[in-house]
Each structure stands twice: as C-alpha cells, then as structure tokens.
Image 1 (cartoon, rainbow, N blue to C red):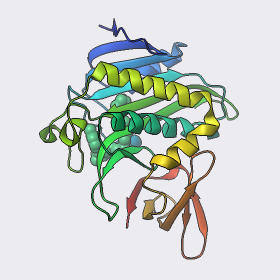
Image 2: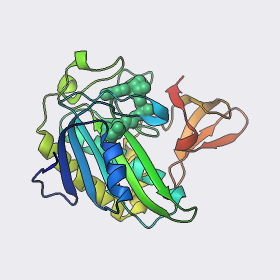
Image 3: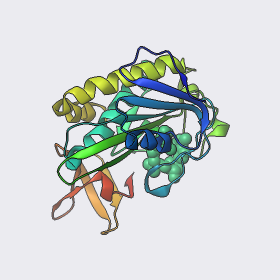
Image 4: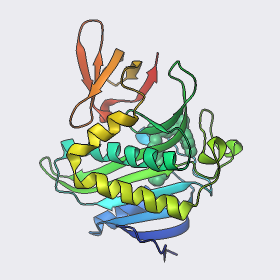
Length: 248
Ligand code: BTX
C-alpha cells in the first residue's frame, strides 16, 4: 500500500515498496486528474526505459515518477526531460560523483577521455494531450543509488560504486526541489543543461528510423533537440527520433 513519505517536497509523495513501474502508476494518477504527485518505489519489477527497453530497478535505487500538468505545447515537453536530467546530475554531484548528461536522457559518469561513460541514471518522459497543449506529463527518473556493481547491467554504475551510499529520502527531496525550480522558468533549462553535458563538442553517431547521422554535436535548440554538423549539412534530431547516440 502507498504511504506518505514524509518529505517537505513541492510534490505529494506516494511511496510503495514494490511496483511494476512507477511511470505506469503515475500515468494512472495523471489520467485520474492528479497534478504535482511523485510516485516512488523501493523496487520496480517491470521498470521501463525508452522504446520498450527494460530498466533494471532492484531495491536500493531511486525510482520515481512525477506527474505534472504544465501549460505548454507538446513541442516543449522535451525540456522537462532535460530538466530532470539536470536535477539528477546536480543532486548526484552533491553526492560526490562526477555526473554529466548524455543527450537526451542519460546521466553518466565519464570514463576516460575518448567519450566513454558509465550510465548512472535515466529519464523517461511520457505525455498525453492535444497538438497545441498537453494535458499531463509524467517524468520518470531512475537513479542507481545504493546498488552493487553485481546488481547492474553491463556499462552501468551506481552512486555507491562511484562514491558512497546516499540517504535516499534526502536524495529524492533534493531531486524534487531542483526539478521544481527548473520547471518554473523553462528558459533556464537549456543553459543549465549545457553546463553539465558531455555530448556537445563530441563526434557522435545517432541512430534514427530515418537513418543514421554522423557528425559533431554542436548544440541543442531551445526545445532540446540536438544539432549535429555532418560533413555537408546541419541536422536537427529530436529526442523522440533518437534510438541510440554514441560517441565515435
Ligand atoms: P533508455 O532506453 O535510455 O535506457 C535503457 C537501457 O539502459 C537498457 O536497454 C539497458 O541497456 C540499460 N539499463 C537498464 N537498466 C539500467 C540501469 N539500472 N542502469 C543503467 N543502465 C540500465 C532510460 O531508458 C530511462 C530509464 C527511466 C527509468 C525510470 S525509473 C522510474 C520510472 N519508471 C519506469 O518504469 N521508468 C522510469
């Protein structure tokens, strides 16, 4: 059963020991009309990533989904993904790890100078609405907090592995505070994101349904799409069109 988590957060926090996916539950709350609710679980048995991928969510991580009802157009929704990544990276940095953002939705720890990284956290944003205005938005954040390397997939890391365990209640509180502050002024999100990204300036390969793009990631647009300079053109890739991005 859900219990109050007792946080002084700018969101009502609904806590569960174990759920299939906090995003699923948050979507149900959103459909029921909820706003400013955060659904939190100690463990997810069916955690999801983007594009039907699985997200490993054993006990000890931070698995949280935030329901909001912002007055924005769907084109601006990716800014909320960026805001969640900024909030996560900032709070992870407070915990003593060198967290950086990999466009569009990953928080990673750089591994050497050739663009490699270990994945610390991810963001999954889902929404519903009309073409001109969204109805609700669910922002799911998964952070490998107090997890052993053995509980993580290949290429992943945790705050425990990189630094030391965190107080997860405090971590969630800070995460929600930072996210709340960022969403108050959408124009501040991209500049804050630029300060923490490792993608800009990298040579990358982006896989899309429409074909791959290889070139230098030069910037993001004011709605969070990535601008890639290839040998002969500039291509703008939205997060929704990106299947994979890797440094090359
Ligand atoms: P993504 O599609 O970018 O990444 C998914 C990929 O990441 C997987 O295919 C796998 O390779 C790798 N992976 C799986 N689990 C982990 C992990 N724990 N740590 C690092 N890498 C992993 C990223 O999707 C978005 C993830 C959002 C998760 C949150 S948790 C709260 C909310 N509820 C829910 O079901 N999803 C979100």
